[in-house]
Image (cartoon, rainbow, N blue to C red; front, side):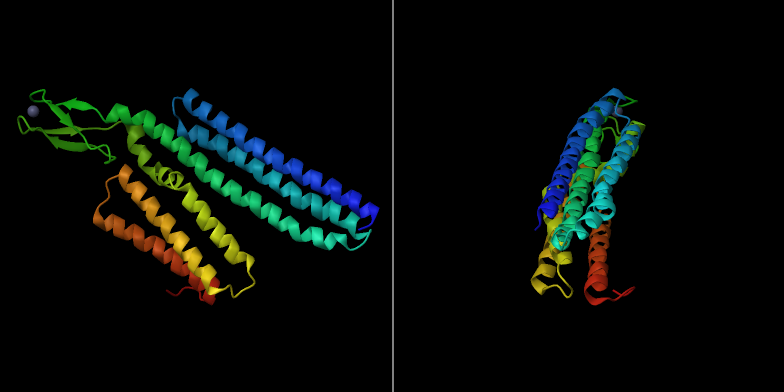
Length: 264
Ligand SMILES: [Zn+2]
């Protein structure tokens, strides 16, 4: 590598490092900010979610600066100096992929964390003793059912209709996020297995396909178990969810491994 090339590569590496540092700082600072905003807005998830979407856009733009700087500045300059550009270019995609993967994990983390905080905040308002309208005896609801409940009083047999707080009922849409958040390590294992698979020139070796399939099923099964600790699911609902994630896996394998579309 010529001195001119060395100097350009050093500048490039320092730019990449600063961008990665900015990426880390943005994740850390925004996490703190979002949690504070959730508390300050009295747990208004939608507002905080909009803030996170805006932050996420900024992070996407930050990741794009790597590609832009490389394509429009660094590579043209390096090409004038010799062949070193070729080796450096091989790493550009990896740097970006790595940041996109970390952002994907962090996105699950944020949505799950905020949802869990909201859940913990709202649960005590709902999961408490209620009094029978007829005799005043204590009746209890099932907090794993996210709708109005009809509870028969043990003392006088009156059926009480108990409406749950609307905000709590709406939480039903965020339970999947909480379940994903509770299994982030398994998600990361699945993500790495997929990255390894996709880094191979097709056809990828069978053991990588098996590793991905195992990691996928481990994550999905654990997520489903977590979901069941939060919400009462009927056997049919559990079965439907299992079939859905198995079908998604089969479809992915058909397309990516066998180049078959629209078959099962
Ligand atoms: Zn009663």
